[in-house]
Image (cartoon, rainbow, N blue to C red; front, side, top):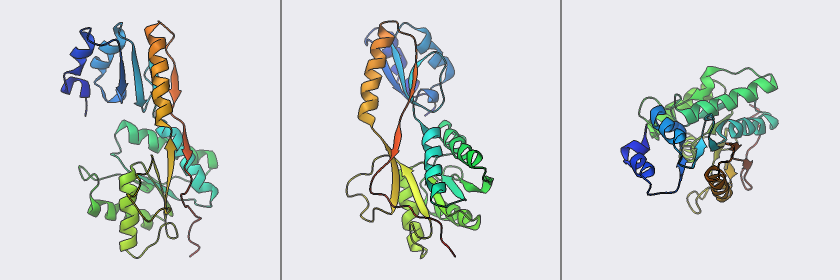
Length: 240
């Protein structure tokens, strides 16, 4: 995970002339020295889905910070004041960007942000039902009435765990996540609300950026655009 290119011996394959360029997914996960070797070479490179901007590179950022801010604002507009966040490990680039987006939304609205609203997995217990059940309990004890999960699979698990606890989504807790839903995966929609991005368009932009990098263009940055998907259901907080 720290350096996919090195793990797969892909960096050497890129640098020995077998390819004309590369689109690198998740460039902020690559070790700095490997990234420096890539960016200082003459190889046209585009970084896709970085969570933080890399100086002097052609890149399309994931939009994790922006989409989480927009998701929180959507929930705030419905009357929620205590919006929590869960998903990936808190020290991951992706999660740090997401938490920053949530905090930005709180600050812009003048609402008080409580560290208890962040409910990331304990240790290696990613997608662990018992761990998520405990995190949901702590969020509810903190008064959270709406949850933003950065991982759609975890969001589906949260809906099910709340149901097993006798609670309803979205009546007792609205849940929002990101990315397209797989057809037939969850028959209880529209209780889960999502923000989606057009990944095909991102692929086209990567190719255009690659041509600009190949032709010696000036590096530039774009951010993936995320929009509220139709068909979801979020409601205001419970009145009781």
